[in-house]
Each structure stands twice: as structure tokens, then as C-alpha cells.
Length: 396
Image (cartoon, rainbow, N blue to C red; front, side, top):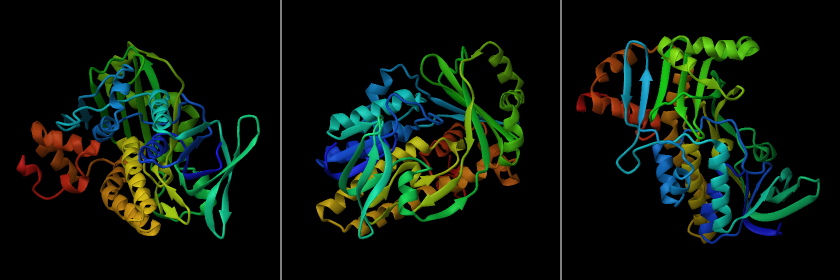
């Protein structure tokens, strides 16, 4: 572990590894650390939305994912009960999504960072940030066997998740926060083919969905409002299966399948954090987090990794001051993601669709271009502010 770097990135998953990779490709000296050793699993929806697939293609990594045997997803289907809205999630340039296991995706990203020239240190536990005159100047921690290690850098990037150790150390300001709204759990079934479809079912106070992932498995997730979290976690399996039974046709398909894992899940908070300060920056869930019901986490991480790397490059090259470059990074992020943040929080309440939403769903039902637009809005290709603009549906 060297003593001096341009950037140290703490956290090597979907935000940290691309940030390290992109900075290393720009010629900066980068150290990437994580407490995990890879391949390693983590809580995740797994969904790589089409714009995130496009990022993998730009980075030269998409072929590595496709050769792992992860099946592509060409159709999203939203069953609201009275109507089902189904369409294509992508664009001509990025027509499909994927739902890879994080053991595969994260390892792929860590390896890409190392190949780009970043020093990668796995099994490293961050103990503290090194500070001088109120500025972060490095990290100190220990390895698997307790050996103390430290390194210095011009900037330390926290990419270590919503419970970020870096955030706790620097006291990053939180804003636009909303409490956890949904309790979501998932597991895997074998023998449940989806034929390229990501299926989502919405019922009053309940929601669930399914998509194929690696090794012949299908991830199935289900959720209920946060008010039921404590009560329902006493019998997660029973409540999970009762939720799936709300759609008898899906429950019947499940009878021919076998559950292949335990249940995973949590109730997740919603927040923005100021993503920079003296000698530090944030990216990924450490900087911005919302409920997983719209499955935007990986796409958000990829996009903001690119933006953060570009902002740091602007600062290091002298084109802008650090504060100017990072303030622009924050402003652009907030402007871009807030409509999806608001839509996600509304959807996570699992409240019945409003009369206006019911009217909209009825208007787009069986109009394929309009249904595609709805699906692409959910996938993050179209902003909710654009989709819900007056008279948009009439334009299809």
C-alpha cells in the first residue's frame, strides 16, 4: 500500500470501482479499498437499466457481462390489476437491461479498475480518515490480520454505501430526506423462466416482481408498507408468499419452481447528501439514496461515477477549483435525479393509483408507443418530469 495518491476511493462496488477505473484511465494515481474480498454479494435489486448497460458498453465491459451467461431483458411488464402496461425499456443504442448477480458484476468492475492501473486493496477495514487543518488527507485502517495501514491522497472519495464510514467521519449534510417507506425482501427461485421479461405486479398495499439472473435463477422480490415492517418480519416467508398469491397466475407458475436461497431485505431510507468538502467527495449510495422499488441504484452509481471522475479531473487539471467543480457535480446530480426520486418515493408508498394515474394508465393501455414511454420512464431513460408533462401521451 503506497503512501501517496491523487485519489483514494473507499468502497469498490458499483460506484467506487467505476470511479477508480475512470480516474485511473485519465492517468491519475488511484487507490481503491474495500472491506470485502471479491467476488462478494450485497443487498441489491441487481437490475442494470439500459442506460447503465450503455455505460458498460462505453467502458468496454459489456461483452464481459454478456459472456457470463446473464440473460438479457427486452420487456418490462407492469400488471396493475385492471390493466397491464408492457413495453421495451431501452433505446436503439441500448435496447435491453440485465439482472446480474452482484457476485459477478462487482468482481467484473473491481477487475476493470485494477486493469486500468488502480491499486486495489481488498479486505481493508477503514478505521479513520487522516485530517490536517480540517481537511481530509488520507485514510488509516487495517487488513484481514489486523495489520495497520495508511495512505495519503489529495481527495478521498466515499463510495461505501448508505451507511458510509466516510460520511460519518466528515459529517456530510443530509437534505430532502424522507423516511423509509417500503419493506422489500427478495430471494431466488430455480425453474422459473421469465423469457426475457421483467414482471412487476402492483396491488393495493403490496407489490412484487421477478427477473432472471445468473445460473438459471430468477430473483423474486416482494414488499409492503413500512407500517407493517415490524409485524411482518416475524414471518417473512408467509407474508412473502401471501403477497405472490395475490396474482394466482404467478403463484401457479411458482409451484413448478424451487426456492434456492434464504430471504434478503431491508427498509431503506431516502436522502440526498452534500457530496463534497475539504479533501473529500461522495458517490453512489453514500451521496444519494432512494427506495429500490424503481431499481435505479446501479444506473445512478454508474452515471455519478462518471460525473464525479470528470469533476475531479476538472479540479486536478486546474480548469476549475475543487469547490467549483464539485458544486457543479452536485447541482447537476440534484437537477437530474430529483424527478425520479419523487416518483420513486410516491411509488414506494404502495398507495392505490390516484384517479389521475388511473386515467393515464387507461389512456396509454394498448398504445404501444405510449406504453414504451411509460416503461422507459420507469427504466430511467425518460425523466418522470418529461413523461408526466401535459399532453405527452396525446403525442404518441
